[in-house]
Amino acid sequence: MNAILSQIAPTSAQGTLFGPASRYFGLATTSLQTRDGQTVIYLTRRFLPQADQLALLQTHRVVQGERLDNIAAQFLGDPEAFWRLCDANNAMRPNELTETIGRQLRITLPQGIPQR
Image (cartoon, one colour):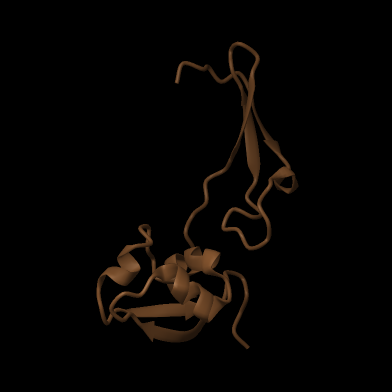
């Protein structure tokens, strides 16, 4: 990238288009000014939570032919919440969670919600 940063300024995360169910919800945005005066707004980096810090609800054993979106729909009520399974199982690549038949997947509460 040939753009030279002349300014970096934090902006409100409320200005993002991500809803509360998104893994990007609540992330701050920041912007930079290119040499030609163009403003580029982007999300700050999202770090994976420590899986062992998430409240475990149950485990699930992967069976032949299962897909992560279907597991998320079954246990979390939302097929697009597959990323929560990734967080709960320290997975950077979602497909790795269903590659091994018999793998035990952790089903957890979202980050920041303690188990009662």
